Length: 101
Length: 238
Image (cartoon, rainbow over all chains, first blue to last red; front, side, top):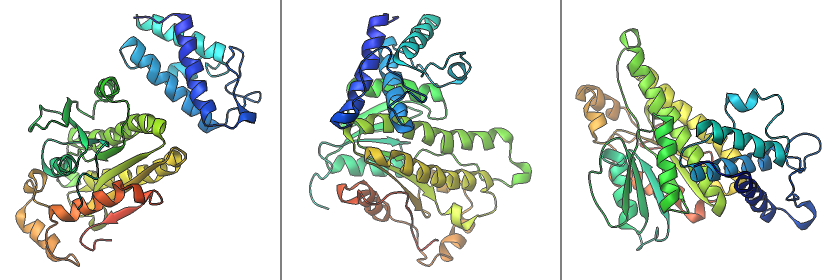
């Protein structure tokens, strides 16, 4: 089953929500497609980013019924890093799940 | 040991079908845990709180599939014991590459993958105990154990680094290096060699089940939250 863009966005927002539960009120990560995940504009440190990727990877794998890796060589070879923002991550997951279908 | 101290805990044991894995599995079941066993073959015993997953941890895809199945049934995972291991004892000069690779794949890569996937689940509860089963071979460096001992040494280093990475999630990672205990694996080795090794230990006797279970209980305890990246050797080996 290929999840819709909306379903993938919901998975990413849930991962950010999980992260926000661990952060204080002043450092909440906005649930927005333009939220930066990686790079200078991101509010996430490396551990937070790893946590989000791990949550998304697990939830997408469970949704499609087979293991999906977001951090293999394919991810690293993308022209734009999939982890730049919520939007790029969503697009990359969508691409991966369509390739698998 | 009092009552059901593991009640409400979900523990995953690799190589749970026999030997030390089965010993630990039955101990945790006896004291109230739900035990998930990973093994290459079918279950060798049954218990109302034992759930067997047939998976070869040397195969990354089988590990991922097994964890997907785990997540469908169990929302939480508290304890992992990386026990599964394969051993080919042979002089390095004539060790087949396939046998050496098999030890790396099961004893090191398998433990890595299981720990990684387990930590993703443990992170949600901010609580976890990962216990790696190592061997006195790391310290004693016996001839014939080049790859086995190297893998077990790698397991310790891997555990120590994971201890740092997983600490923010409330997950501890420790290593228990066991000395000789009567198992199928030990029976593969020449008995004279085993007796010689045991005779040279500061405590010159084989390990007993209680020696192992005592340390498992210690590392798995809620009271051991400040104990991580530690290796405990049995029998006075160091």
